[in-house]
Amino acid sequence: MRILEPNTNIDKGWFAGPWDSDLNISIGYANTAVDEPHYHKTTTEIYLFAHGETTMLVDGEEFHFRERSGVVIEPGEVHTFLSCSLDHYHFVLHTPGLQGERAKADKVTVT
Image 1 (tube, helix red, strand yellow):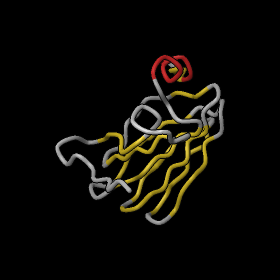
Image 2 (cartoon, helix red, strand yellow):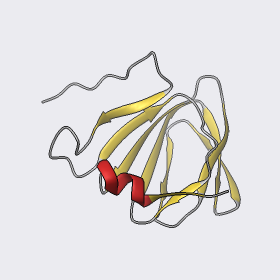
Image 3 (tube, helix red, strand yellow):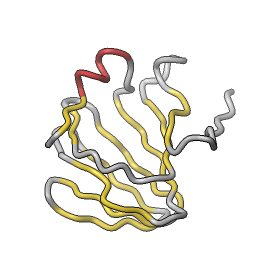
Image 4 (cartoon, one colour):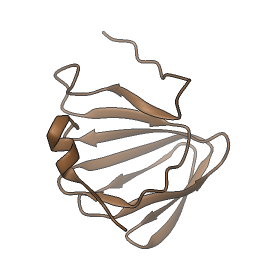
């Protein structure tokens, strides 16, 4: 067993993943919305919105999420956060888990 706690000194970070265990997923968190349009070649992202509200843009369509909701972003879907409430907090799972050079090569920034 491992107990996971966020680093409250940063806006987003990682709980666990293949870099420190045999997990096949990466688990992260954030209390902010980062506007960085991108997609992943092979990674599926699962966002779980624990608190507050947020607005995302996915493949050109705007979606508003409230706490206790979630969304699955499939490989190839361009996505970004547009805004979030001050009390926003979400978890994100990546499958397959992100690690090293594969993680860098999988993410494609869209301008």
